[in-house]
Length: 158
Image (cartoon, rainbow, N blue to C red):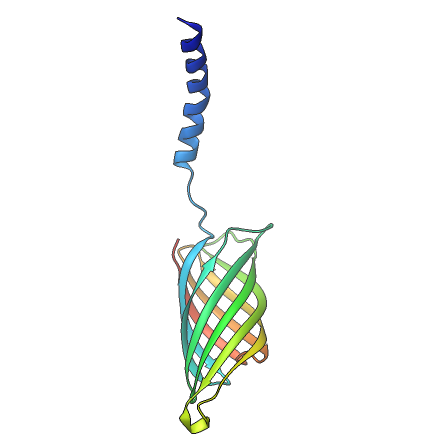
């Protein structure tokens, strides 16, 4: 066996197990896109939207930005929420999380309220439960110029 063949064989002995490990690695179940919807109070609306959850940034802290569009109460609300969630350890299929973050809210009023549009900053604090399969339920409290209270349900695609 030539020295080139020995070198290639030695590299293959290292690369083949590494490639097999990488190919069989399971994706993290804590990241990916999702959908959401629910109701809000002040303004009284039905809302829908989407989110994306990152893998843990540190420990069990995830970044979960989301967009929510609310309809009703003579206004259309679009919320751009930059939220972080901390997931508590669990031994079951359901886990609890808490979180919050800043928001930018766009309000478009109908003609009976002048047809005005405005943008306001806000802050959200939330608590929720989620299934390892993707179903989630969330309560969100808004401060400054975010909707006062939201009850939502969603699904994270994993």
